[in-house]
Image (cartoon, rainbow over all chains, first blue to last red; front, side):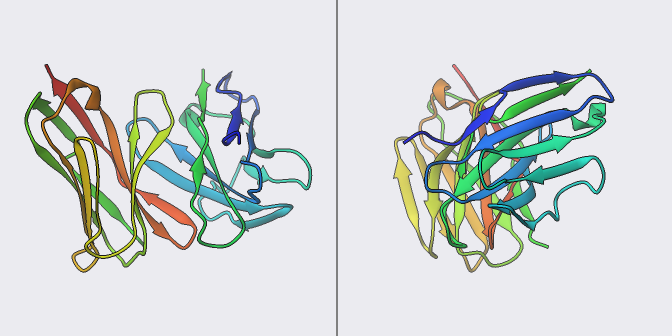
Length: 114
Length: 109
């Protein structure tokens, strides 16, 4: 059973470009969560999605950031017009159906904005 | 708002010594996790603590939970260099994992 998969693992973007981060949950998992880890800090919750629904996006910056989890395919975290402050590690986690399932974390995507 | 604080933030210790990392949280929660993270890597799950008084041990690491004091500890016994990493506690608030700031541990040979 493959774990949570994220790609790319490393992404370099120039200021003003768009970044697209992908997350494929574990088999049988229908809940996806995105977390951001700034340098020297802990992970911070960004958004919680179920298939075709955003359940909680309270941790997402109001502008430039969006997330989706379509019926088919991976979850996508999209950052438009990236700035240097977006440089961070972005981790995806997935859990099985139900509100109390343990979250399993992917390997992360390290975004560097130059 | 649930807050999670860890201390110390940095810990440099000699091989063979014992030390404890503390994790305090501000409101009730029914689960607490400890993770290890090596530089540039993802999180490795170490322990999940579910109830008051829970104690779990794996090798040189032992974690405990006091829900009344809202405190968890990660105790390191006879540290070895391979334990050098950053350790995070995370408290669950509904579906959100609230992470502490991390304790960066360096074990000196």
